[in-house]
Length: 504
Image (cartoon, rainbow, N blue to C red; front, side, top):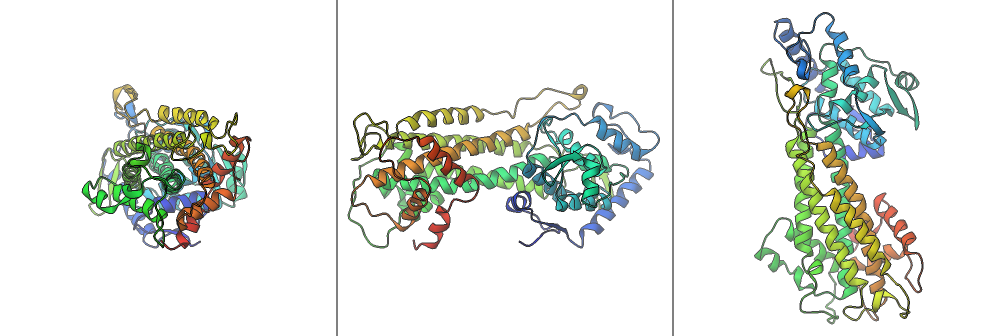
């Protein structure tokens, strides 16, 4: 895999995911150091002129009116120590790596005034696999600075690090990786921490996961339509054009392509109108496509923006205070994405209940081939509704849950890290429901005599059956669902890859 080059042209959520999860290397473009050096000189000149610069020669937050006396570099270490208030379970290494590459991308825009040597040290630590142990609780979304102090302290050789799967003092990790601790020039400490890099980095991972889960949900929905003998006229492109709601045409086309057959087939068992969880899939999935797109756009704005306070405008040779670290739109995008996922998950569970209920469109009761007292698939209805309850709980918004802090100076917040983390949790739960639907739909297909699948759905069915066999008598379906969920979640699911190789 080629290295990700930070050159000012922007990075994507996919770039963040490959660095975070696949150890992709990061390179510094040739023009970046010059850009950082120019901004640093503008910052130093402004400070030398006597300009008040937040976090360089003034205190932070409620201490805004306090002048910093003496060694400004020592103050940078002091502000890191004083803001290391994060607690709780450490963030996963992939989230920390996403945070590191997100901050590096933001800093490459040149608006921070960060010393070039500090930027280089950040990229070197990332490439060497030296990761700060970053507690998860402490940011309210007005910048992630309390969490980000772990990263800044790592670079100066303080705090704890994760290196080669071991937790150790940061100084030892740097030494083992043949890296040296850095020294902080004025404002360097604040430049490292005063940004929403945790929110942007973890948001990039969540969007990446949402995109893959959406593709899997489309596959499950198409397999259900085959298994239940659904009326496919709902996918007619003319219907989507008549009401071109957000994402609906794209969702309908994906389902249509999965169900497309090379030769005309005799009509199967269809009804005039199927239940809404089936009939309205294009609308439901379309809304989710739109929400994912909005979240992706919001994340990529943050990844590629100069979101520092104060901000150095190198070309204009100015240093100005800003509110660019505030991520109201990012938080709102993930709140909306969470609701769209919850809506999609509710329809998923409704389809599972339709498939595994008392029998519809000629399917046997509970999808059991033996009947009688067999439980078949019906116990999964309880598990699915339990999971859906957890998703619905996480869908409750948090964007307005804040209190004024720092003597009222910081009287607004966005709760972006919480909005992103709960959305990521919803995606993981939703994948479990997708696994349930895939299993039930595959069972329904196997119970239909003489059913010929479309090439796309045949590939999906084969992928399910590669891991989960047909239910012929009652057995622990939870264990089967767990196997399928792991395949969906860790990138080993082959359904989509096989579909892409088949003709439409």
